[in-house]
Amino acid sequence: MKLLLIAESREGKLLGSSSELTCFAKQMNADSVMLLVGNDNDLPAYNGTLYLADPAQAGEFNPAVHKQLVLEVVAKEQPDMIVLSHSSYGWDLAPRLAVALNAAQISEVVEVKQDGLLVPVCNAKLRRQVKPDTEICVVTLQAGAFTPSEELTGTPVVVKLTADGEGNILFQGYEAAEETGVDLSKAEVVVSAGRGIGKPENLEMIAALAKALKGEFGASRPVVDAEWAEHSRQVGTTGQTVSPKLYVACGISGAIQHLAGMKKSEFIVAINTDKDAPIGEVADVLAVVDLKQLVPILTEKLSA
Amino acid sequence: MKILVCIKQVPDMESKFKANAAGDWFDSSDLAWRMNEYDEYSVEQAIQLKGQVGDADLTVLCIGGEQVKETMKKALAMGCDRGVHILDEQSYQRDPFAIASLIASFARDKDFDVIFTGLQSQDRGSAQVGVMVAELLGLPALTTLVEFAYDNGTINGKRELEGGTRGKVSCKTPALVTCQLGLNTPRYPTLPNIMKAKKKELISIPASDLGASDSRSQSLKLAPPEKKGSGLILEGEPAEIADQLIRILKEKTTVLA
Ligand SMILES: Cc1cc2nc3c(=O)[nH]c(=O)nc-3n(C[C@H](O)[C@H](O)[C@H](O)COP(=O)(O)OP(=O)(O)OC[C@H]3O[C@@H](n4cnc5c(N)ncnc54)[C@H](O)[C@@H]3O)c2cc1C
Ligand SMILES: Nc1ncnc2c1ncn2[C@@H]1O[C@H](COP(=O)(O)O)[C@@H](O)[C@H]1O
Image 1 (cartoon, rainbow over the protein chains, first blue to last red):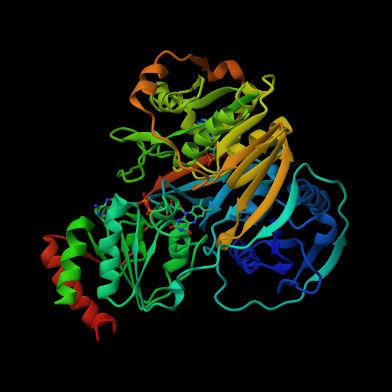
Image 2: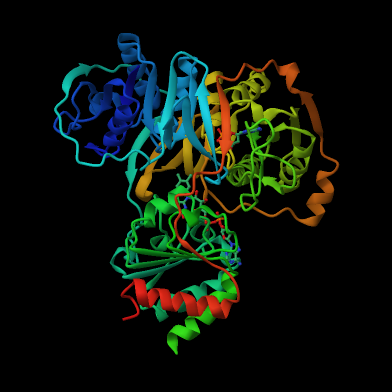
């Protein structure tokens, strides 16, 4: 078994997820080579061949050109599997490769099984074991599912690639996330509101509980998207990452993108009417109850 | 301008799920169904685009069994002009490539200027179908958009990246875009529009007429995750739960000290 690992860089810097690709290769017990469009002064800790293309030439985000680079390496190396992160870069590029190679694609792999890969279904309430039917396949890995237990070391053998072609979309640079109003990462307690609060008025009871616990209130994405709370309060992959002493998730189902922002909290309490909500997987305590009933009583008792 | 928006009907994620008899997908009985959340944003964006350019025809497409018509009617009531239902009772057995090949086969000779899909479906969550449709049709694809603007044959978009950074991208139409949560504020259909939608065209095409490609992967098994959660579960009266919680916080954390 031979894997082609596709690492990523952003604004000239290698992203840490490259170590997850290496960790996956180890779990698959497979040989591998790696491809990166990135700078030659910021290389992954990787013992193997690294095909490297210059972003000044290939564009840091230029899917059509990056696809050609991958296809070139595929032709040379004949891998059985192409592995990317399930990230904004990976889920954009992977289907392009799958179509070009007539290959099966398996998205968001969380675990390797004897005869297939495990992926989440229905907000992680179920897991599906999938097997590719094609000789070569493309997979993306869920962020954080394959983290090496220790820091990797190694120096790659670099083989330079030259890119050509223009691509059919134009990348015009980055726009930084809004300057944050609140810095949740400093709070010792974060009480977050999810869609389960039902209506914006109920945010007040979440904020009151946060205050009673001398903390800040945060929110899941739907609450921010609906403009019930400002973006600086969003916890998750596209918001803030927090690790307070106590995190209270109120009416939050526990999607992976939310968990990524809070699962390192020291103690996690979830309040949810759904006993099977995936937040239960990381919660130290799951209170199965309507938050509208529990939160005001809890606040009152804490303030007494 | 001709616009296509592809939507999927998915179960409410708060449902209880179990595997079906074959063990290859979830059991679809006793579930409440709705429009895939990501697709609500694409429908809204498509309607806004139609409103902007004025002279436009907006088709909503959905692959699935008879029951998906309910969800299509919502899209029509929101403002799509016509519906194309690709009838396929077993669509859940098709992998994203096979679904994409059906959509591409329908769209190939229709000259759509803009095709909208969701970033991903909430049940399968593959984030594949949209980009694959674009690749099969040879169109540029802008993915994960949280901002969309159209100006005289050019789409200017912002892609959402990890950490909330955005990537500014643009391309010429015809093109496909995949929509991320928060792109806009999806409208609710009004009662008069729900009535009007009943008269809108909604045609059904059997999937077999479109010649789908075979799936390239297969589901071997479906099961709940092996419970890693070792947390304590509290149930009962809210006041009792509150007391228990406070006791636990005093014992296990320092935040009440
Ligand atoms: C690329 C990408 C990035 C993303 N980034 C983020 C991010 O940074 N942060 C983020 O949060 N999400 C993010 N998401 C969205 C994420 O996938 C989920 O859609 C989102 O986290 C769901 O929010 P929620 O749990 O509040 O809502 P839902 O999933 O709708 O859950 C609501 C929960 O409330 C419970 N509930 C309902 N009523 C009550 C009640 N009365 N009392 C108690 N419980 C109740 C329900 O049982 C349910 O579990 C991202 C998605 C993508 C694709
Ligand atoms: N059965 C379907 N019918 C129509 N469109 C679909 C279907 N399945 C997926 N799509 C579209 O493809 C997007 C991505 O789906 P997926 O690749 O399954 O995550 C969805 O948001 C829809 O826009």
